[in-house]
Length: 111
Image 1: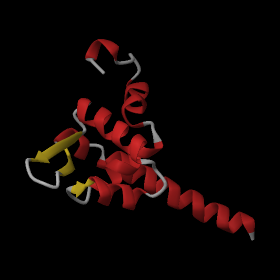
Image 2 (image 1 turned 90 degrees about the vertical axis):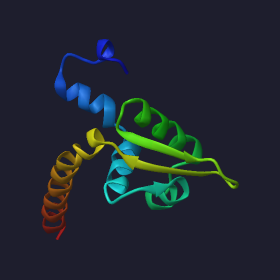
Image 3 (image 1 turned 60 degrees about the vertical axis):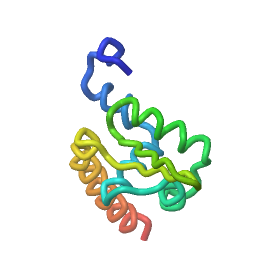
C-alpha cells in the first residue's frame, strides 16, 4: 500500500494495515521476539500456511514485519517486528484491556 492509496481517515488507515484477525495475532506473537514460520503458525493456531504466508508478505511490504532468510539447507526464515510494527503494541494492549473488561462483564451477566 503506497501513501497515495492510504485512506484519508486515520482509523481506516490503521484498519487497512492490521484490521485482519491474523495480522493482529501475528503482531501479538512477534512482539515477544523473533519467530520462525512454523513457530508462528503453531502459536496462532488454525491459520492455514497459505493465509499466513500471504499475511506475512503483506506485512513485510507495509513495513510492519522484517523477513530474514538464511542461505542454508534446509532453508531458515525468521520474522520479527519492525520499529513501526512495535509501535502498534499500545494498540494491542488497549484491545487486550478492552477484551478482558468485556469478558468479565459478560461472565457476570451470564450468571
